[in-house]
Amino acid sequence: MGGGGTGGMGGGIGGAQKPMAQIGGAIVPVDSIRPIRISIDDDFVGHAMVGLRDIKPVFILPEGKHKLTFEIDGFNPVATDIKVLGTNSKQYLIVKLPTKVPETANPAVSADASTKQPIDN
Image (tube, rainbow, N blue to C red; front, side, top):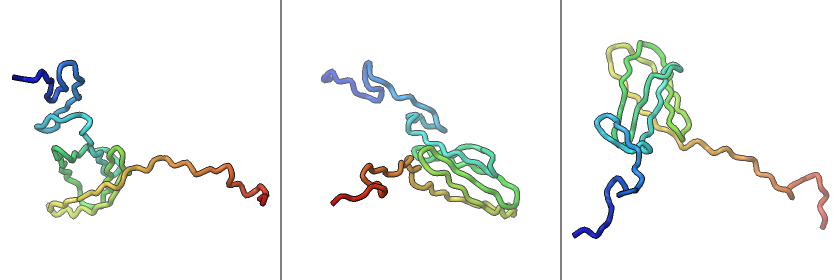
């Protein structure tokens, strides 16, 4: 009954398959993985994940001020200070990543914008 088509997730016979990775209990395309790099007091401590499978790490920190930095490819890093209360309480931190990293901009150059040349009328 089939029409001879080659469908499916693998792209059919001879089709290119996307590389996959296991994240937690899910298998996802590698190009969809966007880990968030986390540093505490300028020391790398691990990754968080958002999207298909959320991975939200828990860190137990000593009382006092700490600097947390979050980095994800294609975005400007985000850093914030937090004061850990140290009273066995849980503190939650919500981080919003800003807009994408701006592309390197070259200043506009115009050949006819020189102010050193006299103007002919």
